[in-house]
Structure formats: C-alpha cells, structure tokens
Image 1: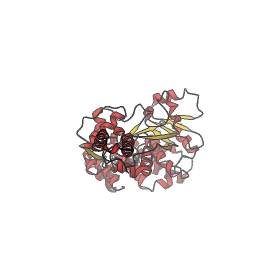
Image 2 (image 1 turned 180 degrees about the vertical axis):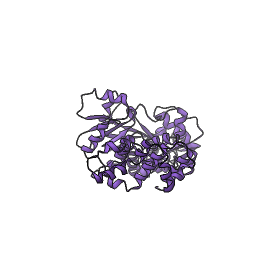
Image 3 (image 1 turned 135 degrees about the vertical axis):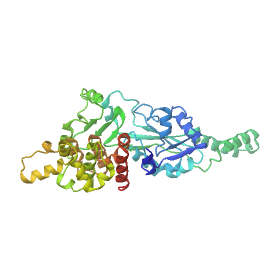
Image 4 (image 1 turned 30 degrees about the vertical axis):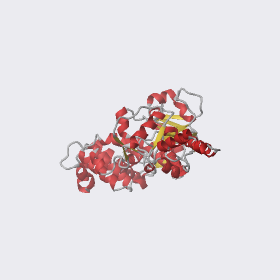
Length: 411
C-alpha cells in the first residue's frame, strides 16, 4: 500500500490520536461494552473507527455490538467532515453530517475535556433472519458522555444552589465537595452539555450485515440484493415480505434494474467517454502475461496499446474490443445481439444509474453496479474502497502505477 499512501490515496485523512485522547477513547469503548485498546498511538476516521485498533482486535467491526447495533466515538471536533472509511451502512456518513450540523458548537465544547459515545439505535436488538434488514426505518442517534459529565454538571449546579441557601456559604463540607468537583471536572456552570437524541430517516441503502445487502425501496417494487449466496438462499425461503430478492450475480438482476428504470446504458454514448477507455485498458492489462514494456506505458501509448492488442489471443482480443466490434456490426445489420459479441461483465460495467434518479440514490446505484462488475478502477476506488484495496494487492507494480495515475488525475 506504500504507493497509495505516497499518492495520498490510502486513508490519508485519518486523525492521529495519542496522550490524553487515548484515555478518553478507552472510556468510550468501555461505556459501549467493548474492551480497551492497549495502543499508545493510533488514528481515527469521522465516525471514530480506527484501522490500527481494528487490527489489534482482529475485528473490522469492533465498534458494533452485533450487526444490528453499530456505534461511533467523537473525541475531536476535527472529525467533522472526515471520511467514514469502513461504513457499516451507506448512510453512516450522512448520519455524521447530521450530528455535526446539529451539535457542532456543543461537540467543540465537550471534546475539550471529554468524549461522546454514539449509539445508532434502529430499535432492533439483534438480527435473526436476513430480511430483518427491512426493519431499518428511523435511526435514533443517542449521545452519551464519558464520566457522565452531563450528570456531574447537574450535581455541580445543585451544589451551587445549595451553597446559596441560608448560611451554607460557611459549610466546610459543602466547600470541599464543590472544590473537589471543580478540580476534577472544571467549572461546568456555563457549559451546554445536554445533547438530545436526534432522528435520521433511512431510505434505500447498503449494509454490511449478512455479508452485504442492498435494500432498494424507493422504486417500483422493493428489491433486496444479497452479496452472499448463503444468505440469499435463506432469504428466498421467507415469504413474510412482498419484495423481490436477488443474488448479485444473477443475470436477471440487471434486467429487473433496467425494467424498473434504476439503471440504463447507451453504448454509442459511453464508448466516447474516459470511463470506457479505462475499462478497455484495464481489460487489456488483465489479458497481458509477459511484456517488454511496463503496463503503464502500454496503456498510455496508443501505438503500444495496438501492438499488444495484436499479441494477445484472439478470444481476449475480441473481449477487449467487443463493444466497438458490436457497434461496427450494428451499422451493417441490426440482427446482431449484444450478448453474442460483448463480454457480459464489460457490458454490465458500462451501465449507469438511470438519469431520472435523485442524486441521493445515484451513489448507491453506482456502488451496486461496481459490485456487480468492477471493471472501472476509478469508480471502484470511489464507491468501494475495501474491494479496491483487495484487488490492488494482486496487481503488478506497473499496473498499480497506471491505476494510481488514473485516480490522481480524476480527484
């Protein structure tokens, strides 16, 4: 990952944590029912997740109490606007935006000497069956302060009122109690530590529960797409809900998404775009075995591209150039079928969210399309970084260089 780090493409916006902040982070972990970290330094993202702590605990979802109960930690105002690198739901970033938009001033105040534990409560204690994800509706975001600072403030204010009564100003025990409170927690009289729960309403989303599920419920019919074959088989046995259920690899899924005007394609249009060029070049790179030139040079130079295109076997050549071959043949006769000439995974990769979709749904559908066919390395980086990093480690150094340059040129 060193090349990605040097290009600022690998978790470059994490916030370093050390010293007193680690103590507060650990208090949040304990308050949420988890064990402390023993690390002396680590980094966190916008929701408080740390890659180093996840590695230490050998648990990517260490901030979850089961798949139905995710949590977050705020220990710094710098978390505002930072990425959520491993979101459990696609709406996690939006929830954090709501949190900071609603309570930014209070967060700035509280994190001076405390931390906030977040409980994302969707009124689901635990999942039992895969279609339980349909119970997601309104998420209530609860806030809990470490050391119960809000309760300490109430107690401190009560002591102050007690101090003002009668001759209590000469009560030495009351003096001592007030001084100890102020010494331990500071003067809390003028601080606004009260953070009421807020609601976040979900619509269509993706969740990593059950090894990955898409819930598309803002369209003609509710469509559930499973990434895991085991949970897909389990879900289709459930007749409780009137929904359409697919596995992500089923060809019928693409047909249904087109029928419901969720996705569309226009080969004449897309073939003129940089996205098509990236997909075509990536496909050629996968077909190359041994080369005299670096992959990066081959994909950047038209002469070298044509040279190596003619060196690969005929079936690979047809796959790389399938779209252009189909469009050429279509000019002669409309009897040709896309499936007979264009590779299925490439054809799938050239789809896009339907133009009628709201902006809020387009990112989700892009993610779904990228998970169906991950041929566009730029969109893979944008919409599924975890899958991108898994693919990245398998590429040659020269292919990595080309990928990094393509991404860097489009940021």
